[in-house]
Image 1 (spheres, rainbow, N blue to C red):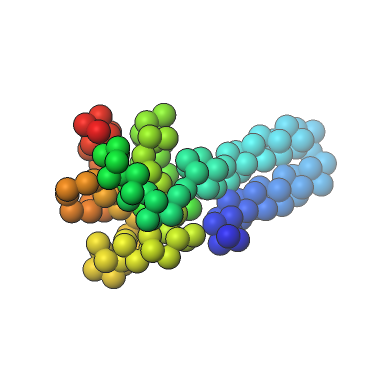
Image 2 (image 1 turned 135 degrees about the vertical axis):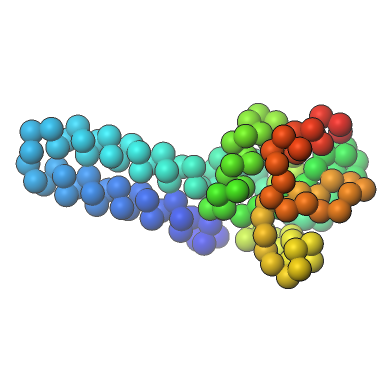
Length: 148
């Protein structure tokens, strides 16, 4: 659980340290610059946190739901820039997918390793009746979602 929050905590701590240093120097515009810097680092921490992703489910449940509603299953992990890109580019449509966090679900991690020659390459998207696809184009995922 803590591993998922390591990446977002680092920019938050870095931004806080830099903001404190700016304020302690006592320059006239230091408080405004420190506040802006802190906001930037807070946004960076938020984008890298698991909070921007829909609530993950385990791999077995995701595959069961996908068999019923034909929606794709996305295997992901926090901090993955390609997962973040996919999530942001899908917009609201991302909530319709079945998301499996491979850092929380060993079966999901095993499925990703099996699909990627032993590597945990994410995002890996599984669509019923098709082989798994690693790091697919968000437009392709959107198209698969519209077919379901």
